[in-house]
Length: 342
View 1: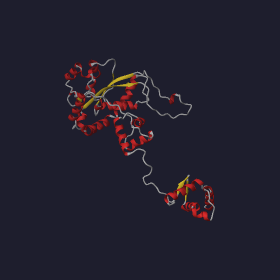
View 2: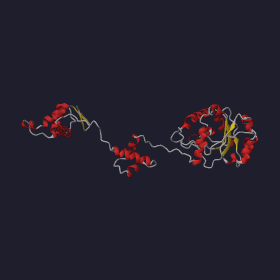
View 3: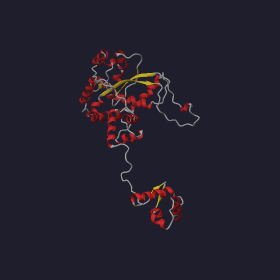
């Protein structure tokens, strides 16, 4: 066994030699030796010139306490700073006060430990700090409507969803920042054009309308001026027949959200006139619309790009979405079969 003291490991023979020179019986033959003298003598015998008087004292005191030079190791290790009860109280407090910091937990529970100890205790129990995702506040009536929608379409297969033509409007900025964008440059190139990310707080945007089905991606149409029921119908009154002829013979169903221009009497009368079936859609449900995923993917692809004119922004954004549709339909089908059952 070896003992560690003052960053030195002492073999057992050195420790027993220290005990020998410190023992009272040796004083019958030799005068009483100080710890420094014993350190010098034993260190010389065992070629340990760094042996100190503090080590001599530590070894002999330990011998007097345990009657041995062996180390008595603590199998449990260092005692924990927080008791099990304190940890339970900490977890319960954190659950009830999820927005508070570790320092607040420490102060409110009067824990005599560091902020890091509090954080480690929470981590050990699986409570890690995450950024809170935004969540839309939905009214009770719309929650019921969304639940009913999920139940009604729970057993739809891919052929059923392929009949739906999803539509929506979306706004695209001509200046698209990229959030945190990393640039490789020299220290003196901070402001060169290639190393900066342009932004404009007053950048213009373009509002567009689009529609997609499983097999087709309809046209991207710019929305000019204020959108009402009449201008809404003018966006696609001749385009739907060209791109989605199945809407006119019952093979396809048109989807739109419940925005006022969409469900106004003028728009609904137009759909009735051409016998176009409009899907019953729950309010506050953008997450159920496949085209929203296409919009998001397109906007992600446009990050960091700047467009001089609105037309170029619209054309490029729509090209990005063409290859995404079938994958989005597949993921939507999977979600309807798995997540809607919860």
